[in-house]
Image (cartoon, rainbow, N blue to C red; front, side, top):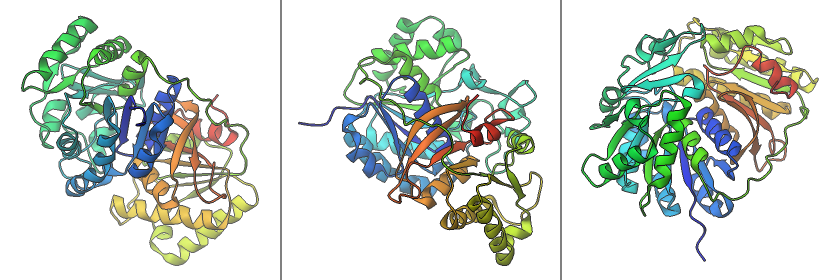
Length: 429
């Protein structure tokens, strides 16, 4: 007897976003699990409503994304989900050469032949809004900015956002022909939106860009998607707002299982902050429950100094102290972002090879992805919420020393100032 068809498969272009989508589905009552290996995801699919696949595509050149995607898409196609969600950052930061959303989606379309390709432009729950196809995002100062004028995202070190019109932004990456469905049309309700989507899939215009300016828009989109029926999947591109929409309208989900409980920390806490955003900088400054180690350029560039740092951090963990190692915003590390990430990954692997830790926190999407892959986790399950956009997960690993480690993988822009201390205490409050 064939395995049940999952409702949705989501492919996270980095680990922080993938863990947030996992948390969003878990809150809706879905049986959901996040895998690092697409083949393992296919093998373990039988008792799951929602299957996640975490990748590091956001940090890769476009040609490597195109080369990787067939190995990801093939097992997804065999699972025959009703929806396939390519999970991207809520700020859509990407480019034609790095983290190309267009390259990934084009390959998914080739492999899946979807009924429709829909870009969901906003996530109001995280103060990301899409109006008439233009993306806006809240900032740490409490203001909302058009994304190309956002104080952080317009200066992103790898993929600065210089275009707010998402159709123009994605067309530059090869995802052309997006037809805008403004929030004024979505406000007409799920019947009208369903009729529009149904008409689009019967015509040549199968790529649509949906606005999202409010939680009500997300609910309407979910209700309209639920009414679409077909053998081929619907391909959705967006942040965790896609899971919010589908989860709010889904019926027939298996009874949600109890998430692995996250109680008092089982050992000391290690946090590595690779993000150099102002939000993460404020969290590092506010942390009081850690021995702090600023990662100076010389430490990461000179093997002897790096070895000494590993020894100090390992000793602190072995003695039961929480440790926070962090990069310094505005500092010239004399290497590009990918090389800096690689040094941080090697640092974490060396520390954990010497000293156990109960909880591992990583700030920064690319850093999170690389560290989880280096450490060899096979899957993640959601445990509890820490902040909007930040969840606590339980890692599964073949090594008993790492199995069931509690993980916080957060994007640079996510979390309140006291997040790191709450993570160390084992409390989301």
